[in-house]
Length: 327
Image (cartoon, rainbow, N blue to C red):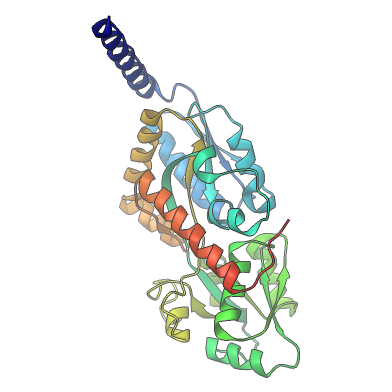
């Protein structure tokens, strides 16, 4: 009897494995939806559309971008969380929703590692610390000195409470011992550019793709970049690490593809492999760099480990910066 039970168990496992392999071989049999939690034209959307087109070519079915903006990416995340885990609804998730929101909100109704299938990282892009080109601030030391000398705190803008550039700005202020007043904006980097040009804010951390054209026409001045080494599109601008002496001062968003929990590992693996192959091409490297971004290479497990490390990092930033958590 025991031998029969073992045989039946092995047989059922074999059938399940063969069934999963067959599903992966047939996937995708129809168009796939790639949900993006931000509006059209922003840095996440631009790269998402490029990856969707390349992924569609790889998989032999259209990958259609579906924008569901709002709440720092949480609307899109909740939508995908509830989707059927069949591989036909994916999310290009951001660092905000994967690493910051879970640490910054008192109550949150999702667990990144239990409610989602972590598939593959996609892109990283450094923030550029920028000021109005007419400002007397010409460097990060100038900004720190001006902030410490000012009777009223200098202001910095962000894409909203809990956004990457909000917490990065608070981290900078705390580390440098300079009072900075946070001013949240809606409308992304474009709104922050307008805020700096109109004098509404003194400084903002924005994507390289948005900063570069404004720097080139003399409207904004870049005073730092959030990378380990200087970037090729702004080679004369020092890193924030150079300017502050803070060796861990890496500031910039990242994103990657996730799906609902419970996806067939073979299907998730097929998507992971395709994304990795796409990002390794010279075309992808040039395309991403043209938008101030870099391929984020790694496996699904690498991405999962990175998300956990980033959650720990931002939890420490929130604690050390004495920020009150959001409800």
